[in-house]
Amino acid sequence: MVGGQADDLAWETATKARSVEALEHIHQHKTGALFRACLKLGVLAAQGERAAGADPDLLDRLETYGRCFGLVFQITDDLIDVEGNAADSGKRVGKDAARGKLTYPGFLGIDASRAKAHALSQEAMQAIAPLGERAAPLGELMHFVLHRDR
Image (cartoon, rainbow, N blue to C red):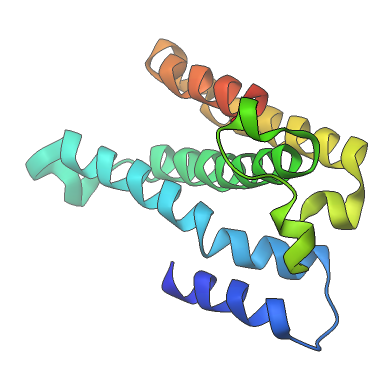
């Protein structure tokens, strides 16, 4: 997570070519790492002494969900910064563009960013679908993040 933050700050002043791949790298090592760690720690804590033998399929499914969730969270955050207003979002908007930050709308545009968030949401939901009702809270959380306005 520290490396992702360092990369994010470095890109603000970098003269390197900017790309969606660089942006995703930053978010996978920043926001995404935070969410993936929470999911994995949840499994390990729930399994207690059996954690050493944690189901690799379950961990893979949650890894996919966490990767997608982190990107959806960030894309939505970028969209709020572009389309939102301070009164509704509870924070200053337009600051990313003013600082020259790498953002999904900056690379892809608003509609393509929204489509990418929806596709990632679907990928996440497919990953956890075999978990059945146990995954319902994760589905609700994804829906909330995908449609949030703050």
